Image (cartoon, rainbow, N blue to C red):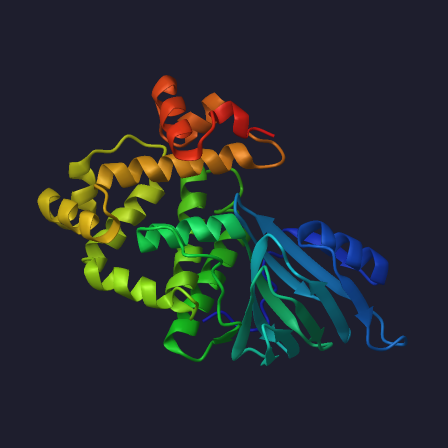
Length: 326
């Protein structure tokens, strides 16, 4: 396991400041509007914020260097996993009062108010996840739409097997991003696979109001083959692939794979591939800044026939790809 003294993403510094107003403003730009106050007028800030962003999530290393109170209210459009690497913080969220530490992380839900107090020595690794993307990944796991907002238990036990898996997955992604192997514009397919894996790990291992549905879906699927097939699909969205190739990577035969997908999702593997490609194209086109053209988004997501892509896109999202831009 990575040592708790590691400064993740050191090559991607976003903010170094001792000014309270600057810290509040710059952190707001990457997260959301919030109140930030020092507990002591005498104590000086020493803010360190490192940041790397993908399409649907960001990984952050953050500490304030002083006792601070942070009041973001509602996060709104994202979930926030906070893994303390060192020190302590006290979090109030969804009626829970949590003492966060290297043994206890927190997972904040978008639609519930939060109040936090970070101690001077608190250093955290943060995973910010777009709300819509988390729902999309969760619904892929479920094989059906989520019944409503997905809400997690905000306390994450990092000493449990599930908590260790969540932390290890995040730390590995942070190390890869810090080395420039992720979210550096080199491989959109690899980035999307990693984003999907991070969210899948969180949804599958942290208690939530859909945990029972996830367990039921897993019970009906031949999980190892299905998961291998979905990993191959998400990792190669932009590449041509056949049903035989998916089955070979999954370690099973075509007939067994087709039956497993029907039980798990009510769709064939190739239908799930098309759905995943459409979802990827939709997110590419929906970004607020630097969105690709419709043609580029289609090709990045693995579509070679633009007319068919437009037809399928409208059938899934109720609009033409060009209408999603901006």
